[in-house]
Structure formats: C-alpha cells, structure tokens
Length: 201
Length: 236
Image (cartoon, rainbow over all chains, first blue to last red; front, side):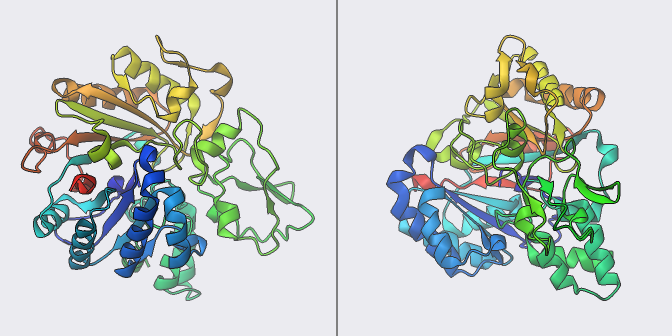
C-alpha cells in the first residue's frame, strides 16, 4: 500500500476509475483495536470491493475478518466512487479510531472528503521514477506492473499473458485475474488491468 | 528457492512469473539463478508449477535472508513489526503526528517499479542523504543495516545482496525540500544502477489542501495526479 501512489496511468479525465481503501490500526494500539478491526473488515467487505487483502491467496470474507485484528490492516479496491462515499460515511459513523487512507486521484479523494464531512490530513505524493529509467518496460506494461506495490507482477508475465490472449488461449478477463494474483495485498484492480490488456492485444 | 530436478518437467511455465527473471535453462535443466533470485516467494505462492518442483530451503542463512525480508511482503520485519519493507509512515499520521507542518517526508525506493536493487546502491543513497543532513525514520528497516551513522556506510557483508526494493525514509525541512528533490534526482541519475521511485509526504493545510503539492505543480515537478491521502478518520 505504501506504493499505490506510484500507480501509472490514472487520469483526471477518468474520475472514479479506482480508489484503494486502506485501514490501519497504529501498531502500538493494535491490541486495543482488535474489535474495531473486525468491525472495519466486515464493513469494508459489505460494500463488495473488486479486490481485497488476501483474496489472491484464496482468502474469503470470513478469514479476512478473522485476521484483521492480528494484521491490523485491511485493504480493498473499489471502482465506484459513490460506493466509497457510502463506505467512508459508514466507517465515520462507527468512530472506530482507526486510520483510513484513500489512494487514487486527489480530486476523487477531495470529492469523498466533501461528501462525508471529512478533511484531508496528510498527503503522500509521487514524484515519479528516477535513476536508470532506460530499463523500464513500455507504458502499458508499467501501468499493469505498478498495480502491485511490491513489484511482484513480472513484466515477463504481462508479455506471456498478452501472447496467450492473442492466440485465443485466454480472455482479457482471465488474463487480468492471472496478473493480479502475485499481489497478495489484494490491491490489484482487475477491471483496470482488463482494460489495459484490451489496449495491448 | 531451488528446483527439485527429479520433479521438474522442464515446461518453463515458471519463467515469466518471476519478477526478477531468475528461472533459467542451464545444461538442459531449469534452475534458479541464485544471484538473481531475491527470495520474494511469488513462484511458490503463484502455484505455477504443476509438479510442485519449486522448493524453498528450510532456513535462508544471513545475509541472504535480507533478500527475503526486503522482497517478500509476507515477511514481517523484526524492526518495524509490520509486513513489508517500509513503515506505517503517513498511513497512521492522524495518530502518530510524525509528519508535521514545516517538514516534508521523503521516500526514496530503490529497485521499484522493476528490476530490484543491490544493497550497494542502497548504501550510496544512505551515504548521500546522511551527508545532506536529513532526519531518518528510525523505525525503517534500512536503518538497522547502517554500520556507521556518521557516514551512512552499511554493514559490509550485506552489500552484495539484491532485493526487490529497499526504501530510505527521511524528513527534510520544507524550505529545503525542492532543493532536496533536484539534488537527489541528479544524484540518482548519475550514481545508481537501478530505477528509483521518489515520493513526498506533506501534512495537509487547515482547509485540507496541500500547498506543497500545489508548489510542486507550479515549479514543474510534475507530481502524479493520484496519490495517497490519510483522511483523519482516527480522530473523528
């Protein structure tokens, strides 16, 4: 999640395309927030995210709820801004004392804050990629690989999936599911990856 | 990681899954290139091998274990108590208030978004920011690797280790922040042998805006239109 800010390809021309929601109990308060984390996990999953923490590892809603007090973290991907507004409003009304970070367009976050009566507290801003940038893959590939904050989506896997789709051995939807699988945090956006794959094939 | 040669059918389905490209064909056998592999565990979790020929050793020795703790997000750093290679940074800033007005936090992440990084490149960056007089995030696992706080030199035995990424996190007075970005950008271009992602943490103004974000736009630093925002939920 540290790295969702570095996602490539989001544009203010396409508002609401994705918002990643992260909820985290500060580690020194994790024990006292166990119940809050469970409630939070239950609430987040109630709004049916497109992906969520552990889903690529096969976890279901019940296991996410059970694990939340121990990990102190819940992440989820949404592709409907109005759903995020409802979720954030719901969490606010519960006053759980747990931090919430939204990752997406700053303009989308602004809209969410306006709708829920909250205010931005701290910004994390990407300044881009530096150093040996001549070894970066193409932009479409980069848009997919940066879906995983831990760089676990291989550019070679993107190439292999594109080849399979072109040969008719896989659909774009199946390809997207395969490509978000290495990201255990569940922050890959399958809908967006599918759209990028359509552009590539 | 290693390949059990008795189980491997040489289909090479594993090859594209590795973000480092560590699966190679050598002497008609599929093997894990020990130097390239960063022990991130993706190949195991992905369950790509139908024969279960990809194996992990029972215990990865030091200093190689650093590859795993800096590359596998399911490994918990002893120093931070959290999963992943960073800290809670701004994610819990509404509770910790680590990032206050007048200071800008910087994350300089080597090896991301592709290719990984050697810790010898990390040392170059740690030495550079040490010389620039920054304040380190003490709970960042990178700090545990520093042997000499006055120079930023890392422990010598770890320099040849390669990781998926390592993050230097530090605080800089806001009036020095733009100069810091320029100097780091030039340094990274000239001195390191990997890609590096740089980001900045700024406490919001009283109206919820970020004057620092606005300033970055005005001076042509081209910040991304997307980012992370702590929305102060813990203090409502």
